[in-house]
Image (cartoon, rainbow, N blue to C red; front, side, top):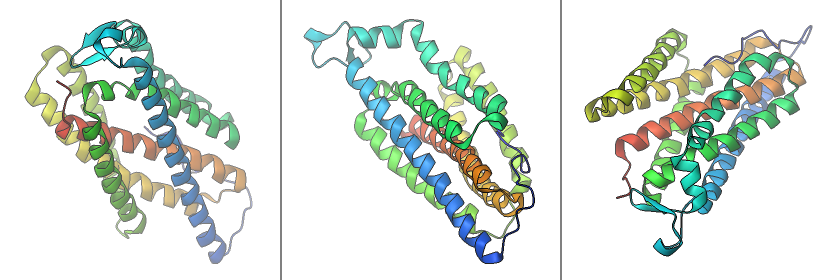
Length: 259
């Protein structure tokens, strides 16, 4: 996904010294990571809250059993009726909103929309707490965090241009989506494993690529304060999606499922 263009928010006549650029870049990237971390925290809290409401404390309190988990009536409605598709697809509505309305949003409205998106995504992600053990989810989350941090740091510090792999990685994302849709009908375990492995690699590459792209956007975009704040939100969205997708593919690959 490419939710912005390099010169879209460029300020007019903004002249900066080298020291101001360096200081501004650090503040800009810190804003990106702060927004992203807040988004992840919101998603985690919402996912835990929804899971708490959806999972029954005992068999006697359960409306039904799904796999190895007993669900409350709320959980039954959320995970076994058409409402589950509404919850699953709701984050896409926010992605389209960002794509079509980003140029008209203020920094504050963009940040609020991003946090609302993170909350909706948290509700969608609550299903992983049904499918996988809590210990497995926590373990994979920290593995993903360590990998993401290392890859993002490398993308920020490397002198090697990663622009050449960007189009290739985005084409890979399209291929992943198509393969996943096909596998809904095939139900192939081997194909799903291949999708997960390739998905981890693609979003690992996108993490480094997007980090470098954000750095270069700031250095060459000549943003004013409001524009920089707005782009930092869209940058946070980009890295948030890289993290979440890498986490989900890695969890599908090595996570322990509930019996």
